[in-house]
Length: 446
Ligand code: 9MR
Image: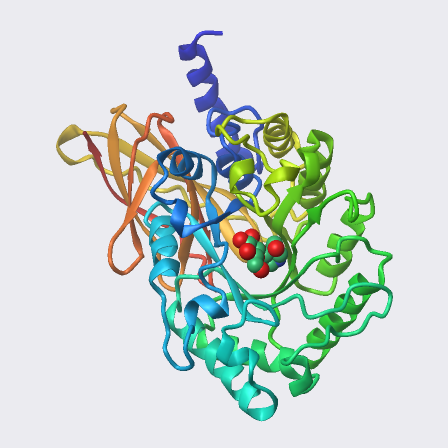
């Protein structure tokens, strides 16, 4: 099939999509070429941990910018990085990552506000109510500083003990009182009410293990008492001692059934088995509230466990078999089991009048979920174009594909430029309670 015929089918498919409201059309031109684009087509993000020190490495940023649409600072938002001296905050490296990501339309996961590890020396030496106060101040200050820029915060990280006890992990924070976790969540909610708030942990993948059950019970308790928790992060560092297990999907769906989102937050797999990577992706796609996957680094050489070669790209930046498996799973996976909860608005968008006969951009509704929706814009009349789209506050665009976005100061106006990916681009809008359709403001041939 020649490219022309393929394009014609693409248009026909797009028309069918509009007519039927069908969610996905595997194999359309807009799907399937990068992890981020393919995940977005499934209503998910695909992210990676990023180290600020590597942003000057061109091979690294080439892969980052091409493949991923969510970013987690690997160390730069931890307590020792952001508050090295008590009351003196340091945000430079974190901001570097946030700016790199947001200027390219990637969303940011903030990691992490409260943790027993990587505490600065001054905090390690504290205890009791002084420590509790210092921890809450830290949560408040950091979440306030980045307010509006972080889609999801890991508010509390790794607060449960390994092994069969099902107990909280002993730490100076835990010794301030069992309610330290909920206190941290309340402080985070107050400081950044628009962000999703996650509890994040490792060795919580196996549904039958005590630690998994202990976290589950905490989340259930939080939900029943109105503690502001929105999501649970599963680090999912799989290795020979702590392997992927087939009940992982049960774990994800069981937590989701409590009324929280679930996210795979730090995925890496010793040896990078393509089969195991595929299973993880399929498990996430099978759970409606699994809204994204983050791998813990880009190339094997970027990994905290480099010798286990656990990532999707080898140290030369080439795609591994695991990459192909993940991409295929994202493209061919089952459609999310949360079909659109509400029929998308059916009003026909008026075609944009092209200024001085330049190009036309037509926006169509695509998939809609409980908290967000996708839109697809088809450009005709130019192969190289700039389209300006606006969303209505407090809506926020959380992901884009098949174009290069930039933003005005308000964050409500997105300028999308063609990037050689064709004439159809898309984006995900977090509704934040407002379901107004985004508006194409202009289309300019360039
Ligand atoms: O990948 C991180 C590594 O560079 C740091 O040295 C390490 C220090 O604790 O933290 C690593 O990231 C951890 C993450 O913050 C929490 N879950 C486990 C990750 C791997 O250790």
